[in-house]
Length: 232
Image (cartoon, rainbow, N blue to C red; front, side):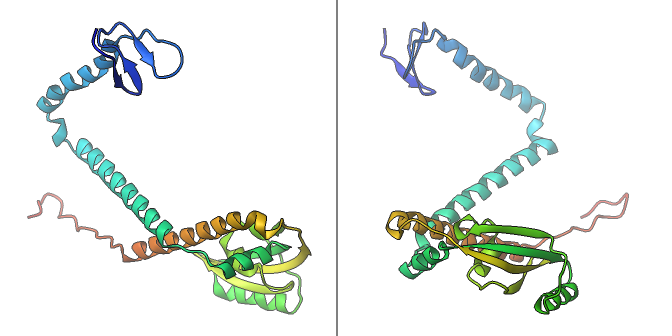
């Protein structure tokens, strides 16, 4: 009997009597049963060609979409690798991050779609007037923040407010309270902090790259020929 060969991650006997998994108990699945689906696909190819399926628009679009998605994924993977190699974390950044862990903050957030309304809300907050806050967050630690806009505002003192624009919305963020926290010693969490800072930098760089790509993208709309006339 010929020596076994490997296929699909298992050991296949050439006499097709049985299959032996690399780990675990033996299996009695004949090799011919594994080859049968591939034979069906191969024998169906001439039928598809005779029907001229590769020339049909649906088939062409499927292949085009698959090619584009595969190409985009390859580009994303390559950009991610480049960002991983080009991002560094400094000691001052680690110290700053650790200092923020000694505090938990609470935020109040309001949202509008136009600058004028936001200016009015900000003026009321500065005067100490009560406004209708849409969201209350906290108390949360610096390492618990999931909204990027809160990261930059977190170090500000209680009572400070900032306006941030994201997309079509304006956000008014107010630091309503702070309380002390007790993080572990820096020596115990240094690497964790370093990795967190690095991941944040990579995410920001990646988002910035995507934003630039979208800004450069052009959408061209081809004019349709008049009804009944073919374009030349």
